[in-house]
Image (cartoon, rainbow over all chains, first blue to last red; front, side, top):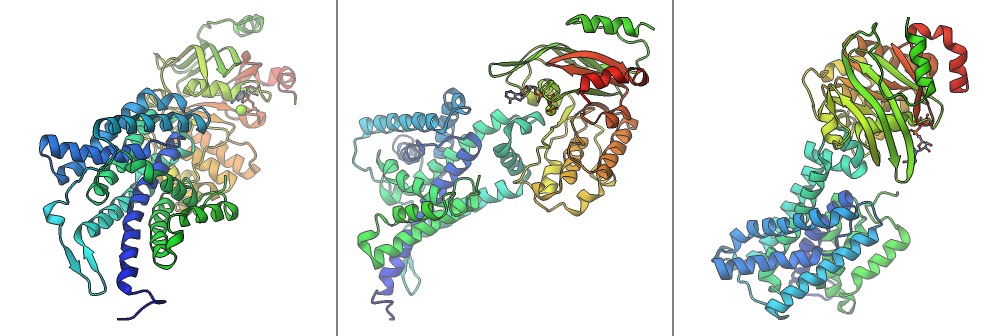
Length: 295
Length: 258
Ligand SMILES: Nc1ncnc2c1ncn2[C@@H]1O[C@H](COP(=O)(O)OP(=O)(O)OP(=O)(O)O)[C@@H](O)[C@H]1O
Ligand SMILES: [Mg+2]
């Protein structure tokens, strides 16, 4: 078979696939962060911890209640979303009028507490979570072998991201959300219960993180630190994409996953830092991010 | 007539209650009394009193910074803090959140128009939820403001100032709200558009809408309103029925500094 710049195609496509998988998680997580930041004005630093919590809810549901993967895909976002709603109602709500820094500090503290509790309970090493039977195996595409579970992760993540984009950009509900992001006071003065909308939006955003956590469980194992490893990169993705654009956060998520994969093929030494190099360049060239609006 | 005596009383101090003028047409729809409001630490309204009856067009006049916008915002429940009494159709609203107030049938058209940049014209137009029966149909709104119909898919803030004002008024006509609070709808607009907005307000009045209008453009306001209240430093200091205006022009000019 052909080779590209001396790279065998199996290796190239293999890394692109890993890039797409990582990109799926970047996209799901940065999408939630963007929606939350838009409406709540809060940089949700506990997003990674809630992603981890999603994976643990899946694991615990299986261990203690015999509820498998498919059930977990629904249960984890609901449980973690409810936890998020309690956080919003009791704590975050008090910070909206203050500087971003307060929200960042509070959610960072929440992340430390949540991760500490889970580490205390479950130890720092990963717990295995098996791929559901219906998604085991792989198919040979000719140029590469594609494991079914990975194909599923990419497909579901794409679907959820695009469905979220559609709801926000093309429906009446999304129009309320966009309008309230711009001018919550006026939207509320039209008769909309904006505080409730904010609560539900936060629940939805962290629900997305929990969903990503369930998707990740069979790939990365379930561990208390899985979120903090990922979230730093996700924040870089959000800044590169530019806070505020829904499609921007999705596209940037997948794109940076792919770039990371390609870097692993062509210049492996830089694969861990390439996103941060891009971050620095984007900040120099376009501080509002690739898709951000200048404010 | 008892009018001059009553005005004396208002001039003299913060009279909190007011008899109902015998010549008034409808029932009192909005009764504001002793209304105070704050933005953070700044105390802006110091006891505002006035009323609006069903079917009337009433204006709040006053110099820049007199507290006209703040009065409208306080009625809608969107200032920092408020106190006193605002009763709409007999319901006390002073402690309600703004979304509940809107649901009673009030709608607000802000001074800065509040058109949403992330929504197109059509989305802006249908954004405010229906709060009561009998709102205008979209078709009727297009007969009032034909420009909007041609620009439905444009970004809201790409419209001209006049078109944005039409959109800001048009979108609250759909909702079935019966009391419209319009904050300086003619500000910064060309004479021909001011005429169009004047004609619209007349038509709305004929259709039974009640309107509380804030205006700097005194001639515009004079041609529309049944009654005028003059505000100064966070208080209502005077009132004129429209028939009394001509006799009191000198005093008004003094109030408004024109
Ligand atoms: N958000 C705010 N925070 C603090 N003070 C404010 C705020 N908005 C208005 N003010 C002050 O409140 C006072 C009344 O303002 P308001 O906007 O109600 O006046 P206005 O009568 O509508 O004037 P204009 O004719 O210029 O629109 C002014 O002194 C203004 O500086
Ligand atoms: Mg004003």
